[in-house]
Picture 1: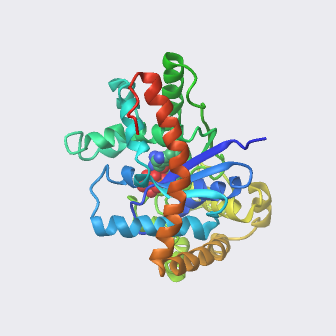
Picture 2: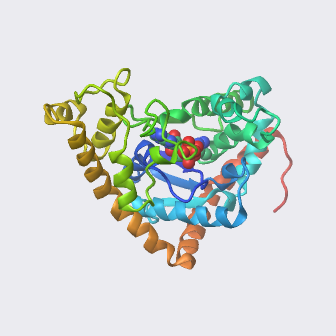
Length: 334
Ligand code: ATP
Ligand code: LTN
């Protein structure tokens, strides 16, 4: 029996992935490789929806790919590739844009959040159409499952709507994808501002980067905001900081929140932070070190990515060919 397909991606928009990216998404990618036909990409086309320095973008693309590998993505099991190496992403995105309502795109909350500060005048049209490109990423690979964090739920809904719309207008073409969003760890919060999601653009002190030095990570966890009563209990409403630390622990150690509450009964916040730091470091350190090692041989890394792009291109070209035909474009004769 053929395996179902999975696709996901992350932007190379920083020098490191953070704990939210890892626990919210990447950890699930690794687990899914065996049971799915997996496609994982570094979405550089998405990254340029906000200004990027060319040298940094190049560097960040390789750093992101190295972290995927270091976290356990196996290039022999999965197609690991860079989005701009597969031209069909931009091509399908154009087709889908012509089928997306202006108002529909305008309702995307990520666009609204990202333009809140500067207003829509400084935002690019690319940022506006970002979710449509994401839909193209997913639909090209006939993905049945898409492992992402909670913040991507609305973009997935749009993807499903576009797929359904295309299928009903032109005939069955795309698989309708489902999100894989794990509740407990779907959202990791900023250590300094535990009601906001951990983000590259948040407070640097509240952000744990995979590529950070261990001493830096330790310091950030030790300075995490908690609250004034001293009870270690999971309650997102009244105890967001403590709940976030318990969530991080649970996501890595695999222990349930209830068993952690029992374990920490009678202990103080200092104990909780020390143990969370220990659990995080024991997981992150080998990933960081392996990623750094992979980055010492850029030629080999680029070779792996080229090999991944070849695999990805095969399916992407096939889907795009079907789309072009159904729409009524005449064959190019290539
Ligand atoms: P950031 O807000 O840091 O810029 P992003 O969502 O724009 O993050 P991406 O690299 O595109 O950055 O995200 C990659 C994946 O990480 C997505 O699946 C996203 O849902 C997930 N993710 C990002 N932040 C968190 C978080 N704080 N908790 C859980 N998952 C997260
Ligand atoms: N928008 C996503 C990144 C992304 C993605 C994708 C995720 C781009 N294309 C396709 C899953 C599938 C984000 O996390 N900000």
